Image (cartoon, rainbow, N blue to C red; front, side, top):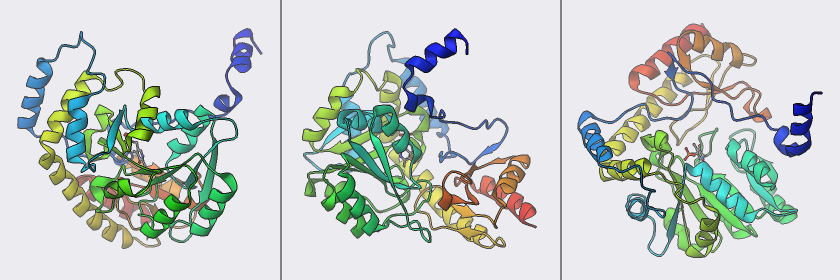
Length: 362
Ligand SMILES: *Cc1c(COP(=O)(O)O)cnc(C)c1O
């Protein structure tokens, strides 16, 4: 081993060396249905307003450190209950990290369900929290409530993360099961509502009912993924502590101004997410008609599907060869054997996906 490798091996924490970096697949020239993005961009008039707004910004100055105007706009747009505070992150990923940093300590753990959002496990590892993943039910990806309650009792996790709807499975967990988990958890429970624009279900209105509940949202899936903006809503008692680990000026001036403009025009994005919801139903119906394919119910902007046994990799490659990029989950978790996860795109993109799949399946 050379000197450089020795140095790195000696000093980088073993649990970091054991990780593989978050991988983003190349998408140039492909129909991009792999990352839960909103396929629609901004209408021309809104782009003009946006350009005018950005032209007036002085980037030599630091941004508003607490993004007060944007927080007020978000509180209104997301119906955050009175008396609750908002903490903003550079994407909700950064909020997960702030929570984990604030709660980490020797012998402490973060509990979630598997298969779930991969960043919970990765960030737990970065921050030195033991990750406890309780398997979902194999048949429908529902919460195995007795198993979660038992793990809560045995592990006493500092924090529980639940994505509602769940990623990568797309389903909404049973509301009563989630409530039981909130009541039984010894520490904090974070309900991650990244897919709120695609479902009616939410715990936002119930924030005041539980001392240990906070709700996380993001503007990424509604159509602003490039801005990197997430929000955590909860009582000041929790959020004022998490705010102490936030790096100063974490929400840049361009994001503050752009998100504010977008939220003043929220109707534009509501129309886009509404058409994605309509397309989701059409796409799910058409996927169901493919021979040997199982489609799982989705309340998000993607659909989890299972190919016939042993076919997922061929189908994934076959789609890419036909110009369509989806996410393959085969090999990610035992319960996701043969699974692919296309994001719902524009009607013509979904048609391209369906045409390619019927060729491949034939
Ligand atoms: C996409 C996603 C996020 C991350 O959102 P960003 O705000 O873009 O960082 C968080 N949680 C879940 C469940 C997601 O699917």
